[in-house]
Image (cartoon, rainbow, N blue to C red; front, side, top):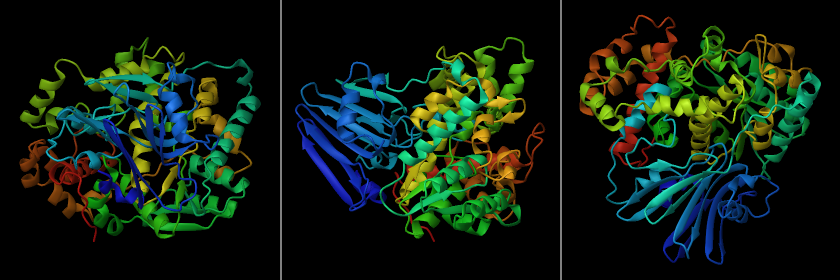
Length: 567
């Protein structure tokens, strides 16, 4: 299984124990690598990744957490995956970091529990049946990623971030070790106090993630969040090279990124993200991501990681998490619905949240074949796992305000299940360590002590972060309206990538797979969407999600996760 992840390091360590085998990969000679195997009495712990720098022995910290009757008393943070074996009890405990940068998957096969940090490792198990889980694909086609702990391969499960899973005698239980609770602090009501706290904690989060090895990169979009990380790196006097995407004439934030780099004195590399650069990487991209991720940013993120790796870097910082923590732009429709809908229920909120993804929610009858729809109904019965998941998050009693519930849902769904694992899988496959300091445990917990007005102040989003960066970054970066990366997927798949779309989503391919109705997909490929879609970019978003799913199925269902070369 370790042979399947050669990109994770050139050094392999294994431990053969009574009833269990543990192992990991790491990079020989790279300072700061926390991978280790600790044997202590009845316990053995394998840990890979990076914990917070204050942790002297990561494996010992993991053992203390998983063996505690109350795991929530721990302060684990960072990017890690770990497993602990209790030989006396015959109990396996698996855990990953609080926000899902690293993952652990597990499956039971012929009386043996297998676990791994990447799905492709499990698919290397001889005779393991490999077929799609229709419920997970149903989730993917709603969100553009698989939400929750269900996985797209039937029988495989994932450890949810911030939770501990114990497997014993053929059964499994789950306990949280991270619990986000909203407790507004009146001492932080004043703008100055809230701003000072965010300044201190965000800078500390960056400082605490500085690798000991040389060679640091920054994915710089030109937006507020990544620019803020660049500012803190600058103030910490850390040599760093910035990377930004160049979509050619369709670039939206390239000039802003160049402005930020100039103001901070950062060397900047423009990474070609035009269609000719994207088309050749698509099969390899699907393999490197491990899971299907259908957002258009995946291709550009691959190009950024490849560029940083070719420059000899070992770690990259990003600005992921700003929207989720501080009330970014992604949920305007939800906020509007809350204002104009009298006493909305958790169910109505969940439906509004699903609709905000603009993929195939409520279009299932158009897209799915009768057979695929029947498979989903047979497994789900009368329920809807998507709504049930969101109702739990949006109805959580740990949160006291609507903004708090929305932020927690965004962290748990968009952060845990999409943003964090997607970033880590792509960069990690190029041998890069990912640093996402805004998804810092102390900063995240503190964000739930802030009044909602510090996040959404009138029409000003992320108000407290903007105040923290005012005077540190150019005003046109801090106070401009967010536009997002705006990946031109519609122009790509209806133009230069049309032949790719035809090969992957043509009638022959669709009929062989048996999931989607060729007539509906043909309308999408012709640039004709359903009547209520007012934005042409939604066509590209839908087609990109279908493209990446087909590529993922070819890599992981047809080839069982085996790599294929790139031209």
